[in-house]
Image (cartoon, rainbow, N blue to C red; front, side):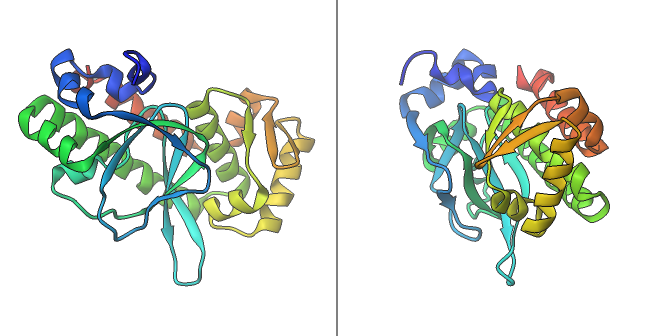
Length: 238
C-alpha cells in the first residue's frame, strides 16, 4: 500500500503512529465491488475492512426474502471491528453498496493489535457503539417516519460518505435497503425530482438541492451525524 492511502479512512488516519504501526505491515488495498457479499450474517468474520471510498451496507435478511439496511459504513469507519472484541460472528450481512477501495487486514492481526494497545481497543469499542446507535436509529426511523423522509435521509448519508452528488442506485436496490416496495420508492423519487431535490435517470441519482434534501429528511439524519461527530472528535479518537 502507499504511505498515504490509509489517510483516506478517517479512523485509520486518527490513529497514533504507534497504533498505526501495529496494523501497517498487515494492511492491503483491495477493491470493493458493488453487490458483493463480504460476509453473511451468522458467519465468522475473517477480514476487517476500512473503506477508503466505497460503502458497505449492514443488512438484515428476513425469512420472507426481504433485506433491510441497518447501517452504512464508509470512509469514517470500519467493518468487522467487533471481532477484535471477542465477537467473532457477524451479526449482520455485509454487502458492498458502492464500488470503491478498502484497506483490509485479517481478523487475527486486528485482534493482536487490540491486545497490545488499550487506546486502540477503546477506539474500536466506541466505534462499535456508534454502529449500534446507527442501527437503533434506523430501526426507529423505519418504524415511524415516511418513506420520503427515510429515502432523503438515506441519500444524504450516502452523499456524505462518497463526497459527491452523483449516486448510482437502482430503485429496486433502494427499496431493498429501506425495506419497502419498489413502486413506493418510484413514487417518492418522482416526488423528490418534481420538487427539484434530485434528478433520477437510468440508475443514477443526481442530488440537485442538498439543503432541500436535508429539509425533506427526518431528524434521524442529524442524529447519526452527531453520533459520528462525537466519536471522531473525542479524545479517544485522536
